[in-house]
Picture: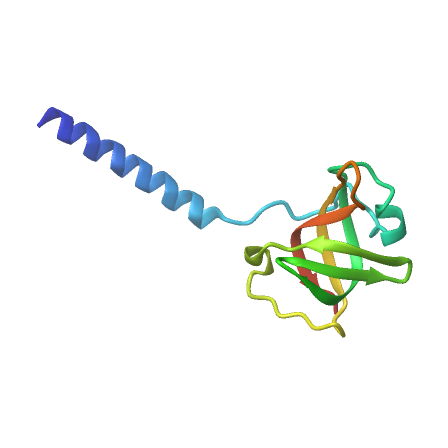
Length: 121
């Protein structure tokens, strides 16, 4: 009986804390360390894991969560996981903002691993 009460109390506390966290939601709203979007030409020369913001268009799908992204300076492959779309539908005519990180392997060209994508208006 004592163990059952302990487990029940723990479950109640866990449920309340999870519920409170879900209600809070949100995140930081304010200026970012990245003041201006990066150009594709510059991103290709950045170090691995550098945070980037890019504004441009997704030209086409390259298959398996990879897409060709371009701006006035060039094009680069971006990887957008299915869950990062968050219900957003984008066409090649849409201008989008991509937030992500440079993904650079030893012998492969740089790519961008996308954390979020939004349509620019």
